[in-house]
Image (tube, rainbow, N blue to C red; front, side, top):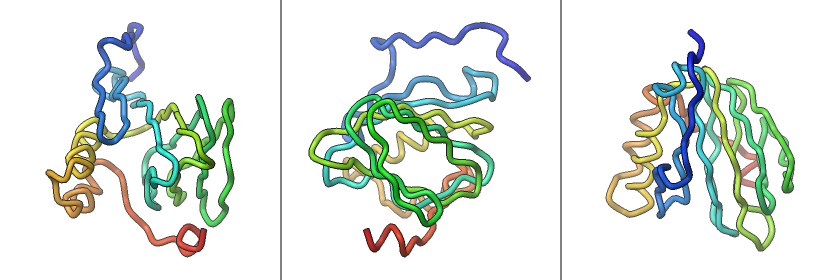
Amino acid sequence: MSITKPVLVRSTDAEVLAASGVTLLADTPATNGQLTSHRSIFKPGKEGAPPHLHKEASELFFVLGGSLKVLTSEDILTLDQGDFLLVPPNTPHAFEAAGTEDAEVLFVLTQAKPRFDYYRLLEGVYRGETDPAELAAASDLYDNHYVNSPAWQAR
């Protein structure tokens, strides 16, 4: 199914998850299953996401500010402001701020499952209110499967 009308999310209406630095923009129910999108701000020296993959979704990264260190399969690259990266399904990836500035990134996942509740669950982990094991237990529900990466561990 395609989107039948424009989807507008005003910045004043977007849900902000302050502890994790995530701003929820549009999820699959609003986009008729086409995509889910959020913006994240990553603090220097703090991991953005550990190695994981999506079995169904492709994930787009667009760096709005700062720099982002990204694992794709076994390669680690640095994305700078204005850089675009598309990670296809079944590709292990991870990311964190690179350098001394915050990294601000727009994410879009296509062919994705609804994900906003995943980010709310993650917010609970950041706040110390949710056991991190709940994230792993929900891997199929949110198509977010954690993997081991020697390349990322060696960084």
